[in-house]
Length: 115
Image 1 (spheres, rainbow, N blue to C red):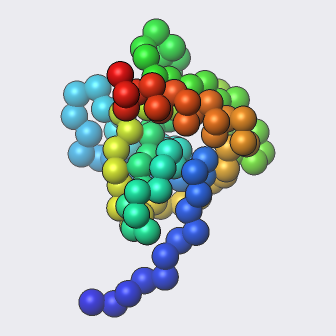
Image 2: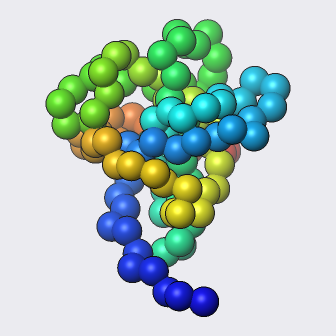
């Protein structure tokens, strides 16, 4: 088995991930995901983004588009749909959130995992 060079991945990075096997209300298709936590060197916790306003749900953080985060429309990070992902699923880094957004996501994620 050939060893690959690990990607430099940080909390707040925004990557495209394809989730073609999604069922039910889980976000499907190729879409931005925010890195929420680094679990190990090869596994991260990611949360999908959607452009559909779902603020009536718990554990959602609104993110405005910027040139730094790579989003082109207002997006909503769905922390209740976060999951552990192998870093090989991270297709393309499109940006990074600013520190205030990372903090907002971390605070909402703590609520989610402790609720």
